[in-house]
Image (cartoon, rainbow, N blue to C red; front, side, top):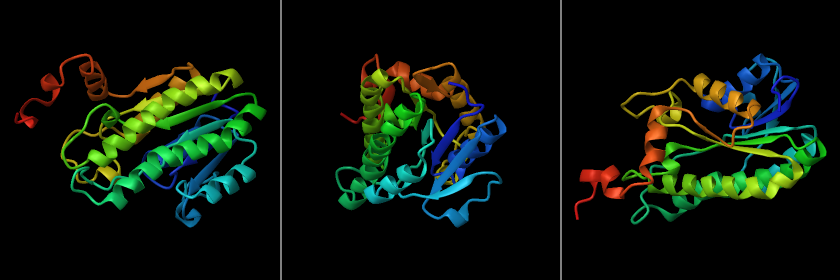
Length: 235
């Protein structure tokens, strides 16, 4: 599909990667961009149409789909990280990660699949992570939820192929966003993530691996896990 002339909805559009999606979609000629956030007053992007949305609330998702019936590009970007471990961490926080990344994304896809079909098929973008493919101690909940979202992406891609809907998964390492403010290491510009993604959508790519780090992690899946995790495994 073409970005120019599209009608897009971006979840989590108030800041970070989502904000760059909304801004650059307009810059690349989208005819309308719904900036979907919990607090519409937080959006400061000229030209977007704000939409109140909480993807962990099924009623909120249904209301958004009823309003945005002209969408042909759905960007599932909204996310959260609670820095929660799986074995000893707070189960409510673990559930929140799953409710956001897995059930929230699935809820958006289920609600907007008929909308996309009615508008010619269009495309869905799921913003995933290199952490879909590995874990770090202290962030097991996030990695698990992102792995589930990756599997979800693969599943709905097959199911929606019959209605001509492209489903693209986006993997990246650390981006320079508020979510990653405490990360001490190289970070990619969120705008570069968006440019790579939109280019991938126009090329009908099923997967966009944004940076070298993500490509390295993906390649490691073919090898013994000890080669990747090394000293992190004591036994």
